[in-house]
Image (cartoon, rainbow, N blue to C red; front, side, top):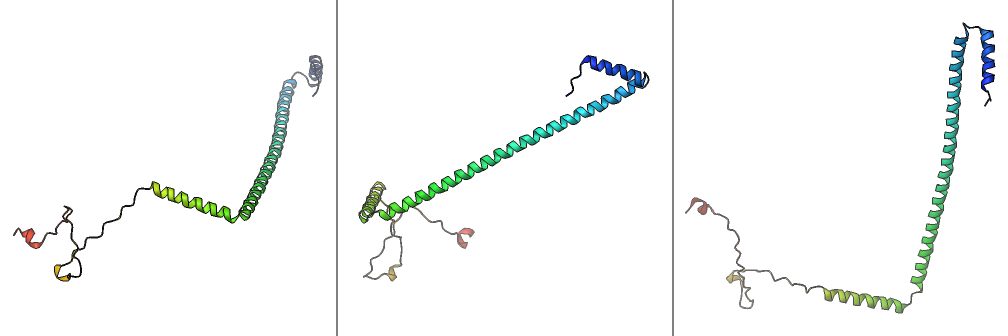
Length: 164
């Protein structure tokens, strides 16, 4: 700011001593020091505010650039997607009936091949039905009950509980 050397400061000090006198000079020097310190802090605060504003403007510019790049990328993706969908529709419309038949035949062959790889299906046994002998006639064959070796648990009757 100001280019003050030692000689200039010494001249100002001597003039201040002559004008103010030795009794008031220390008090004035202390007050001048406080004011000079406040001035330095104020200048430092203004500088940091200016730097902060410059950084904020740079970040806002960067944010705008990134936002515009993202929008252009999204627009490009939408254009490519719509072009791809249009091509797909065009290919599907231009497909011949022979091609559809070939695809259907290939699907049938694939299904048959997958069925051949599956294990044979187990057919369930018919349910066991026991009818009283009086209800069956000669014309109806009697269903035989198979003993699988599993007995159903019996309900305890009143006589079993009493022990008779």
